[in-house]
Image 1 (cartoon, rainbow, N blue to C red):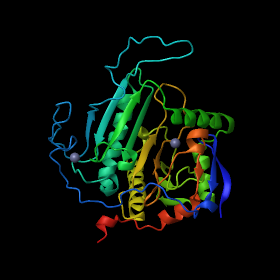
Image 2: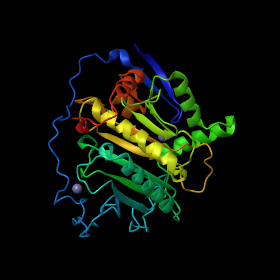
Image 3: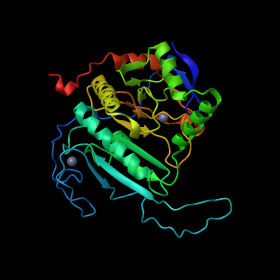
Image 4: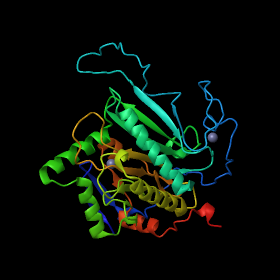
Length: 342
Ligand SMILES: [Zn+2]
Ligand SMILES: [Zn+2]
């Protein structure tokens, strides 16, 4: 039985782990587990090669990844700059920035978990280029690369892809992680994330996979049941400075983790995946350690994690499962994808 509060050192907040309650009866919303066969090309998919998008632009006949500016950008160079000044204490600013889409492959049905490790490695180099290119632009203070996967997280197009928001502001989570990591670095001379990795190694129960250069684990302070991190073992402030050897190790660790998540319930596992990288505003981020965070919304095959009173009302997470047992479930899964296992 695990019933305690755990401190999240990157967010500086408490998580309540109340795993003694997990067998209480629950009637929640269900997620359709049935997965119809998906073809590798769809003529009416906006992201498949050669197709025309809503904007009227035609996609390249691309062979690997395909990067383009989002046709429905939430931040954009065309955003209005002459804004009305709001009343009193209220503040506003122009929603300028750049929003892009990166299609992972020409195959409409090849999720990140199903790509070859070499294709994932290639995608990582695209993420490197985008961070450097967008982050070096004037007025871009942060580059957020993320993937929403699955109907339950509201994906508008199932063709495997991620999005990049390059913004004039720093997203809240990164702002917090940066501030906390830098303070820890100045106070102790340590990289906070390295201290987390060290504590994970000492305990050992939540490490899911590791190789020479990369590690995948379900952190002690996970907020979601299957929340998992992938990180290089050496500290890099962003993905941009990883060597080719580190990229290879990182691609392997990411693939193994995603395959294990899919294998858990023999279903394409929904998640929000985000690259946490140092801001590009010219500040000092010696204490920042690049990592990927994966936040799956499911607690069980047909059960969503609801954000309710504690999370929305109060701002802290309440978990019904012990991170140690969830990590053990994942570690026990094979490293070969169930679709490729027959
Ligand atoms: Zn498609
Ligand atoms: Zn993070």
